[in-house]
Structures are given as structure tokens and as C-alpha cells.
Amino acid sequence: MIAIDLNADMGEGSGSDPDLLDIVSSASIACGGHAGDAETMRQTLRAAKARNVACGAHPGFADRENFGRTRLNLSTSRLQAQIGAQLEAIRQIAEDENMALKYVKLHGALANMAAEDVDLARTAFAVVREIDPALAILALDNSAQVVAAEALDLRVVREAYADRAYSADGLLVSRALPGAVLTDPEKVVAQCLGLARGEITTLDGHVIASSARSICLHGDTEGAVALARSTRTALTKAGISIQAPY
Image 1 (tube, one colour):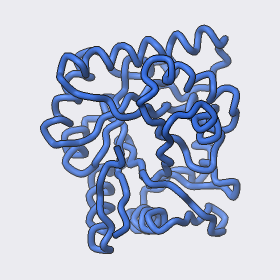
Image 2 (cartoon, one colour; image 1 turned 135 degrees about the vertical axis):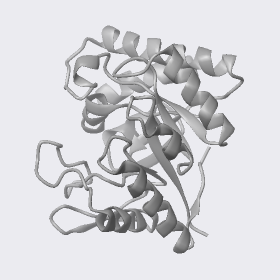
Image 3 (cartoon, helix red, strand yellow; image 1 turned 90 degrees about the vertical axis):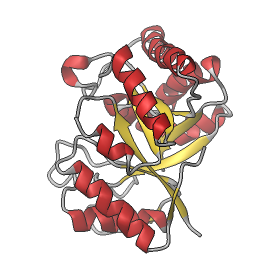
Image 4 (cartoon, rainbow, N blue to C red; image 1 turned 30 degrees about the vertical axis):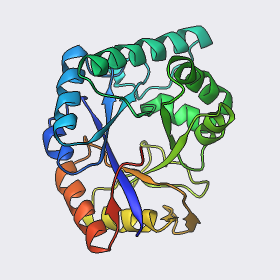
């Protein structure tokens, strides 16, 4: 049987977390950089534990004003300090709650930059390896994130997006461009079914191979919960098992 992970970004203030936690198999939790604080981390970890949902850290640029979606050129030391502080914060709370974090997923602009720049990705993931080399990297498929994480001997789980359009190089279309975010339920479901079976249809209609085993459902996309529920239902009806790969 084909198995796929459904993950969603949590603790970002979207208001959809409780409903999404009933649908997904993995939760990527904001840890104080672009969003979140000690209380939201603790609440999300507890809610995920109650539902047997795997949890990971979701660090990004410490830039709340722009929700971590503005590209910043930080020094190596400053970037690593920001990531390290976020990882240590959520690890401590997870330990207090008797939970084990399973993975790290970069957020927003940092994730996009690391998908394009292998050196930047190595800089980010080196912090993960130093803090806990057992953590997996949830990395954008077909990107420099995968190359960097594998070079550091970190476990990689390849990820794709349910509600984002793709370009011919296998990377995400910029949010600034028309059609970058998918909100039509039929298109989202079709993309997820294709991803589960190993392919992506790009914005210009080409079909490319995908090795993604985790699909991200954005909690701040319009109609996020309904889209997530429709996606899970369609995957299950297609005989695809929903389970975390950790």
C-alpha cells in the first residue's frame, strides 16, 4: 500500500490548528521566530500528543513583522544563532511534556532560500546536526535542501505542497505570481493524488517526477480545513495510507 504523510504548519495563530490536528499525521510547530511563543508551543505539543500526531520544529527568520516571508541576508553566525535559539526553545518544552521531536522544517523565506542555495541550507542544517543529529529534515523535494541535508548525513523526508503551484524546475512558484497558491478543492486534491503516486503537474502543464513522501497543507490558505479534509478523504478512498514517516 502507498503511504503518505500529511503535515501542517502549526502554532502560527491561524485558528485552524485544532481541526487540522484531527486530519494531519505531522505538525510543524512555530518556535518563536516568525511566530509562536512558549505557550503556543506547549499547547500545540499537548494537542498533537493527544491525537498521536508526530511533531517537528518549524524555525524561520526571527522576523515577526513579515511573518518570516521576507528574504533576509544574515551573517552565518546570526542565522545559526536564530535557528539554534528556536530549536532549543521547543526542545525544552517538548522534553517538559515528555515528547520527542521528530524533525525540523524550515519556514517561509528561509526555506525558499535554502531550497535554492546549498551553502545556506548547510549553514541552517549544521545547527540541527549539532543540537540533535537524530532529527530528520523535512526538505522540499528536488531542492538544495535535500542535497545539503544528505551531505551532513541527516535523515531526509522529502516534502511537497498541496496548495502551491510548481515551476518546471520542481521548485515553488513565487507567491507574487498569479496562480501560485491553489484554493480550488479539485485542483488541490488532484495535486495531492498525483504527489502520492510520484508526480507533480507544473503550472505550465508539464508532469515531473516527485519523490515526496510528505504533503504540506497550509493552515493559512483560504478554506484550509475543508481542503485538508477533502484531501485526506480522497487519498484514503484511493487506497493511500496516511501516516507519519518517523
